[in-house]
Image (cartoon, rainbow, N blue to C red; front, side):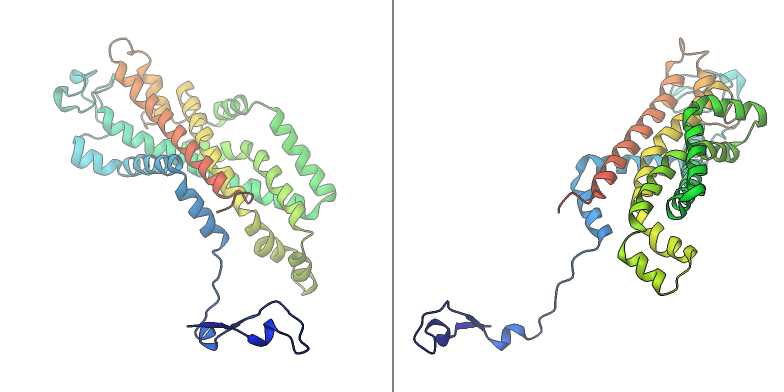
Length: 321
């Protein structure tokens, strides 16, 4: 490949001096392919990988999830105990005693096995609650922001009412009346936790509905449902993803608090919260029974929060690569 100066560009036809023009050889253009810029999500992932704290936190979260989802393998191949298997003559064994890797609880059940199964329950409740909240809050927020008017006013006043009531108190009241299981508890958490997300999605939709691509879709005859589902909600998806990553730790703590108070997941089904409730009677003699589930709650909430902060920064359009 080569490039040369056009001599006629240096000295004009009438003798006037002009700026030189760079004449490119045709070979420079042969096979040239325009470079496409990376998409929004690819740029976000590139920024996320540069955040070492967020990546490290994500690795820890993945390890905790694998540990919890592999509870059956932990029971079968590591401990050899079932989560509800009692050995009262070996109750409150210290770590390493009687074949218990992390010890046993007050009913002679293996602590490591129950931590794995309890993590599965706690994470499942938080994940299902988050997914349900995103579905409810995202739908209602998009509906209110797109249609506006009386429907918007009614939904936002309902959101204001729910936001004015302490969430934990409301959940205690509901759980005392209906005594839900793990899945029911997640749905109840979502039923009272959607207002915050609905306001964020509504704000996004209020801005997006005036954009040119929405007007173009409307001119082409697209229905309101198609505009919402195919054009507006996908553009509000980053907001919902970031919000979901930030709220999972709060839902883990909510489930733990309810289970600790006896209004969440019921014994003998293990969860980190009710394991703490059982261990409070023996914390003077077996402090590991209190420390281990509490530490897992703390570590999981902290690392998910750090990973979520990295996700928030990665999706921030004001940041440059």
